[in-house]
Amino acid sequence: MFREKEELGKAAAKQAAKAIRRAIDDRGLARIIAATGASQFDFLEALTATTGIDWQKVELFHLDEYIGLPMNHAASFCKYLQERLIAKTGIIRHHLLNGTDELTELIRRVGDELKAAQIDVAFVGIGENGHLAFNDPPADFETKDAYLIVNLDEACRRQQVGEGWFANLSEVPKRAISMSVRQLLTAKEILAVVPDARKAQAVKACIEGPFSPMAPASILRTHPDTTIFLDGHSASLLSPATLSALAVSG
Image (cartoon, rainbow, N blue to C red):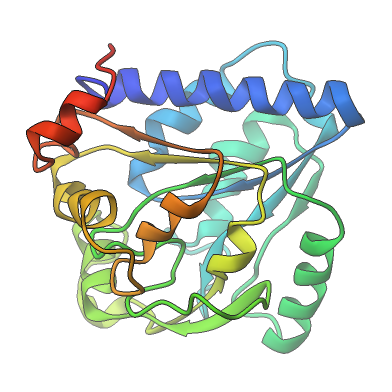
């Protein structure tokens, strides 16, 4: 746990860079999954500023995207990744989800590429409703499909308005493409970057509550190599016993 989100972002970036370099050293290529959203700002800024990563040897996969939203829309996750990760690093191997494409073919094509080899490290967040990617509660914990078409619940859509991506709820798409929970769990390592007080209730439910599709990110507890990066705000509702088990840094 870190006192502030800036320190959290730097620490997560340091661990991410280590995982990327290790994969490149071992196999000549690092395959990564990147999350988007306001919670990832500090992390991606620190990661893209990190030296010593051969980004030409990194293959990037897209976690989720709104259906029907043009790639040049301010809230498009394709636009987000292009501006905050791809343009800053020069990544040339990337598989973006264009939500205006023919969905069946898009999901098949990118899904086949995703399953072609193991993902070395996945960067994720946890939604205010506990979602993992766009798998809102109750999440599908069973399907092995790489990507799903999902309906976004109102809590998820309100989060997007609250973060400033849309002016009002009516503008937020009601459907999205999301990497499935089971597919995400096949990554060798998962880094969950979760700052800010607005995530505190979801953090408590996913760390201390029952393992349940109603708290989708609770499934991260089943993964053998997941690190959840919290700040003092996102960890504020955790019990003293849980907090005492966390290392405080920053």
